Length: 80
Image (cartoon, rainbow, N blue to C red; front, side, top):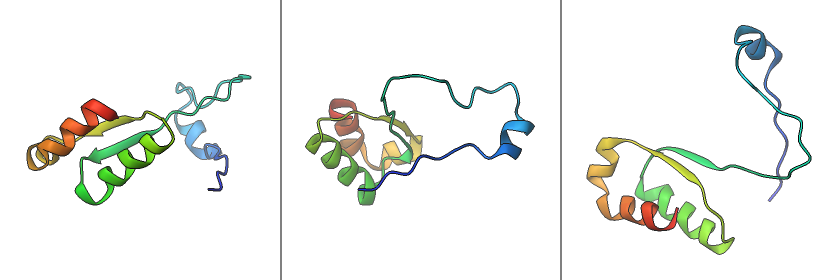
């Protein structure tokens, strides 16, 4: 897997100068977030992949998707 660092576009940081876009650090931490789930097509694969790498992530879920996929949401709570 190739990971490419992404910088915040200068225009965005000028439009929102009060936001913190980056912080100098020597740490090599990575925070994974997933939005608008759970969705059966993607969330199961993400959870399986996280488990393979013994990793965790933050999931931002949508109510109707939770209602439509309660067992998948439970899996997020237990594994994610």
